[in-house]
Image (tube, one colour):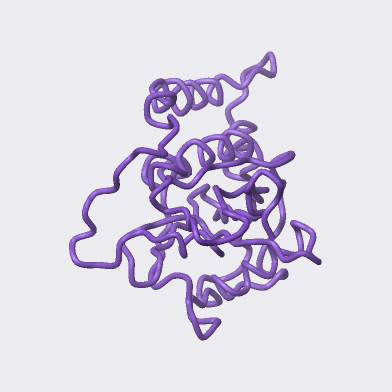
Length: 218
């Protein structure tokens, strides 16, 4: 399902633990790491697609998570020209996404990367909330940054940290410092690192499968 502008509807998932660290997974047989994401079917709402992708890619069910929020409207990224399937009609130029923030409620033993016959991921770890924005493949960085900026205030660990450190006048100084450090310092060069990456070239993958257009079909 590709829209008139060539973008495929898609959902992205930020799964956060109590401590604010997020689920970061390696694509099966590749060296690329990313958040869970996947395309929407024509008969699905974004929420329905999110729950389906969550189950397929992580083995988690609705009772294992709490939906804390979602990005408003679509966030788009373009595929580099070298990854577009020119023989496909209509041509998919990229993804338009709704991003969901989920609070992980269950024990880690319920995570199953082999929930389907064709697993999306073969390894995962928990990383700092902003780590993915700087370490995902370059053409996805801008959309990751935009999604995380919107979702960060909803993460329980950050909300609790702010509540515990408010001063007498009710102002959250510690939150201001965290906001400045994460958004100003880490992302002062966002425009440089998140520019249109249609002409970016990925580093050699060192013997594993390179990134392919198939990686963004789901």
